[in-house]
Length: 557
Ligand SMILES: [Zn+2]
Image 1 (spheres, rainbow, N blue to C red):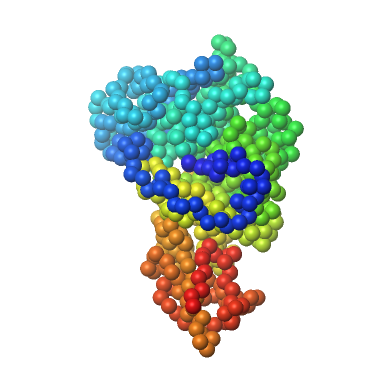
Image 2 (cartoon, rainbow, N blue to C red):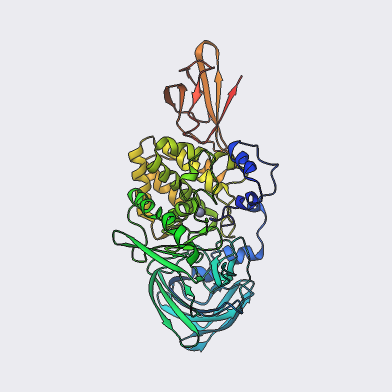
């Protein structure tokens, strides 16, 4: 994501004194004059090549990757191969993989024989001498090498050193794409069912990647290979290398192994801080069911950037402090009571990694849900009131200038509204459902229905509608596909009559809302047409529960 779990405003805040930060979180300053949103620009050829699920991607279904690489810290280079196993879905002679143009394709082999290929920007089109048949399984080996370009907020693939000068090499490439450092089918719709990751690094260093640790083998040439096995579907951007002189400690949550990797000098700080992981996992398991990657285990790995939801290998760079790099992120006094990166990135194991968006356009399924899960975590630890405050503390960060769901097929990440508006939208939906047990069951059933699958917003809408027996489509559309939030218009008329309606872009928008006399709120059922009722409270005391709904209220004369 362009802010990914990389929240982009951190860049902006990083240089500000803390007083200025407190101010930006505490007041709802009007957004700056609308700039051209990146979500509205015409796509480039690169955007289309990367984002489009075209013929040469759609004609096959990924089964398995074996990424087998050697990383040379001195040369800042990577070389090796990815064995790609796939099943054809239709007869064809060509498939598309992806590899950044800065990296060299050395050769592509099918059963030992070289295949022809053509490159355009990051796309690698591979041609087969005979037609691949629908239903048949094929394996190719893509050999590559080069020096990955360090790019993007978290470096994509970054060759750094730790404070002792030892190599510290990490990957985080959600925005830039996994093909910035390894060849793969770099899109969101199709995931392999599993993956083997073999990484050779100089003796004395280790690589921590996704999945279950299989073993390490001394290669006798100054390198040691570290083998990991991913036993679940995985996003291409979720695949990670973490190479360093890590210290390791572990724990268990029932049968689930919890493994922690930090630089040796941070061991004493990491142990108490990472103790937050276990009760957090218990909270999310209570809501949604078993940790999604039980066979692979749960890992937290120290990295030199803020954090990323790498599947079963969560990247952690929050400096062993609570809040967001030690700051009260929502400005309502709750953020400093837990480690934002541990909670947020781990929430992605359920939403982002297990339930995944099939296109970057629908990334709110990762970010809106993960942000909402922070609120559920707060609710379990500190109560409903604290959770409502926490979620409402996100309102000043929403800009409402572009739809949360962007155009499909061009790999264009939504604006940061996908986080906070996404969470506030789910918070609002809960108030619409107005039954906590029903809401929690709905969330759990939704997760269970779609875990290990890649879905679009339409799937979410359809599932929620079917489970609730209601058509909430206009509500989803207003919050996710329109820039503006709904406005409750109120007109207090003579003789105690109240006229009310929703002002919304969706003609069929209808959403119940709590309003009335303080302490005796009732549920109004406004639509986009005016309705009238005997006002439940005089004009000057009439209130709307805006803490339970993300809406605006306008009183008309
Ligand atoms: Zn996130």
